[in-house]
Length: 320
Length: 49
Image (cartoon, rainbow over all chains, first blue to last red; front, side):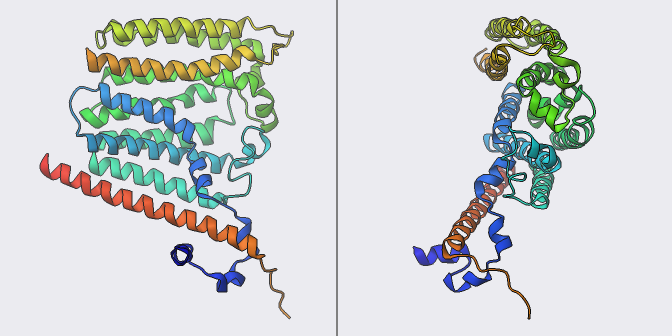
């Protein structure tokens, strides 16, 4: 076993002197390369993409469905890696992100960029060759949107960064649907719109209590630019749009009462959460006096909301 | 006379080797998984064109 270990490592004790201090300084680990893929973000993207595959009319062989979802996951990971490469300067000054592999010095920026590009190009090619060109085109569009429109253009320039940039995270159900049908219809566009409108209240809840981090990094998130009061108002407005929009698949007869009831109750819960964010005890500048407890709760609920909402749609379609 | 960089200690070199081994195993697993996936996709496409 130990011999095999030495072979796998590609060295033995006699080579010890060939290891430079530089090589040792780059203490990257498999876990760091996985961290570059932003696995937590990826899980939501994979889930919504899978729901797109499940609810689409038609049939896709399970192996092809797995391949399509894998391509969506890899593309999301690629976006995460490229985003970490581009944002390494601001990641280094934000408490939440300063231990990421690049600012912590465990992975070289160029390595992360190369990793991201290879995964992005690879996922689009595999999607195009094994599934269909429409799914591959939408996948390429989502990667381009996330990298060029959100990360490089909007994020550092406008407080509307995550409103417009949210479109990038809304593509997966459309890609999943296109993988099965080879087209993009009204229902995937509605699913896109649900994730798109869900993104601002989700991110701004996080931004309310990560306000200082964003301010230090110079990222013009809405709470930094417009203050807590305006952000709370915007969170409520987007949530008021989200709830009726989430019921659209039911109005249109695409889903049955399981989804309709789930969407109504989940929406009610969402409104209760954001109402608490809006009425949180604040100082005159809109800074929370409760350590942003309602915003933290709203952020957690928003993740649960999207998971259950999409799961209800899939259950409804499978049972109904 | 040329100056050489300081040599790593045994423990540092051991950590480096362990990490490199982890990366090598990960690459082998990913490549094997991809080969199996492409094989399976090819069979599916041949059976159900």
